Image 1 (cartoon, each protein chain N blue to C red):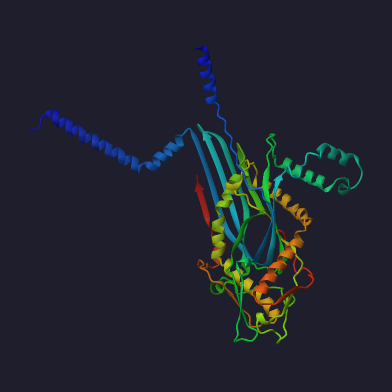
Image 2 (cartoon, each protein chain N blue to C red):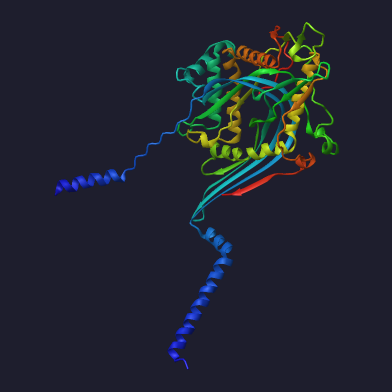
Length: 291
Length: 206
């Protein structure tokens, strides 16, 4: 027979183990509730909810050959508000002098006022913090061949299951005028290698795209700036509107045309054509919208 | 003794002051680059973004910022002609050529900032920074591009490029030009209707 103290000790151990087991089970099963309790009673609580809902809106056809990309960095608002322009002097001139608005102030001063309006409206640097936003502007130039547009809403789904593009085949306005081939043999030439001379007529080079490169926070080394989406939109549009005039003076289109010619020439020479010539540029086929 | 105490005091004070110098640099970009990209198709995806940030200290709400806005992503696809265009003769066909184009790929996924429409802005405490918002937009770009591919953007870009090449060669007298595109593995296509009515939600709690 086991002595009484020894039995008590065994019973104590069993009870301890049972309590531990019950506690462990409670901790495992009640974990979500414990977390919720902990979150509700935590002295400092922080939560962020982010939701996205993305829908495909439309699919469009393009026909643009990009041959040159000019990329530059700009600082809003300081690039548009140089210290040598005085706001007070500018406003005084507008108040007291007679004449049309565009005659009284220069383009730089107009940009200054527009930038100042944006800064004031959106409270940028309102606490004398000196906030700024660094944006990369990308201007692409090349040749626009087409303006065809395809709206996915007009597409019949039943047809789409069999053929993704049933209703409208891609339309191009590039025809016989772009490339003319001459050979001493039969016409049309039998092969590219039998072509003696190719005459290429390219449309004039145009700005094919102007865009503000999206900010990737992981690679953006400057301080954060408090901006609403609306403020960002207005700043980006302000910068983009001034991008085209800024780069056109740098001979971008001429350079884009030259690059395009060199590439097309190389392509045709690689194809076996003996000589490539370029006819004077024709009328623009399409003036693209800047995006 | 006094000197030792002073020295010890100065060292202690200096040790308590933290001096941090962080240099972050980025390449200054101001460059001109030649390309040979043929953009032939694009998709536009609309995203409705909701961000709510809350912070409480001892049940006292210090921060509660909500912003709801919509924005378009543009996914552009086409051919990088610098990857090589092969032209071969087809001897058994009169005026026959075989042109092999590089496969189409997604050339850019960009936010169309002019499409931003701000629907709601409520806030107590600090305002959200643009970098925080941009980070959220950046996070979904890969999925937007993947989605565009599933709806046939690349196939469409290739079809358009082939049509353009055929148009040029036909005009030059090569009526029998055969345009091919170097094959590449693609995800299966989706039908269009679910894309318009469906949704791709992502709700994350941080």
